[in-house]
Amino acid sequence: MSQSTGGTRERIKAVALELFTEQGYEATSLREVAERLGVTKAALYYHFKSKDEIVSSVVEDRLERMDALIAWAESQPATLATRRAVIERYADAMFSGEQPSVMRFFEQNQTALKSLSAGRELRDRMFRLATALCQGDDSPGAQLRAVLALFAVHSSWFAVRTPDITDTERKQVALEVADELLAAIAAPPARP
Image 1 (cartoon, rainbow, N blue to C red):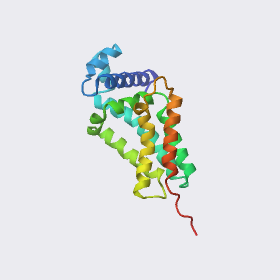
Image 2: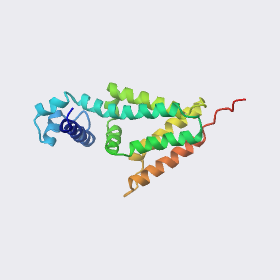
Image 3: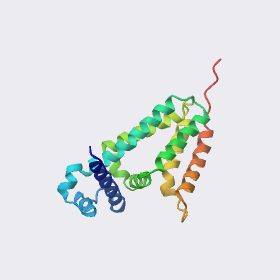
């Protein structure tokens, strides 16, 4: 794919996410996306045939990053240091580049995402990552703490409503809350 084609696809995704967040996924048409971009609907169709394809493309990018993080996490020892490293890497990914707009889109369009296969895949990866976070402690409490630690990173985009908070401060708050949860997950028993 040429650089300009890739750039166009990225621009389409950014504008579509903006509109989906502003108006809602269901209420936004491809015609509106094309108009906001200043292109014809046919030009938009060249890159994406449907809104679902746009969302799937956004989710696929995120799934690739999550798969790499899951593979890394599963290859590490089940320690608090590893858990902290995993959640920090996850937060770094969620706070970089276009991810804040993706997080806002996910938060605003949860119902639509549940019905899309991309949303189900994302949910599956979240549980796999949570499982990696609580390696060595399969108790219900550890499972819940691992999911809530991930949710601390996500929810910081909409739950922290402090005016003028910076992304760096928001991320720090999320990591502090996540760390409290991760610290309560038991280390695996020592091998004799």
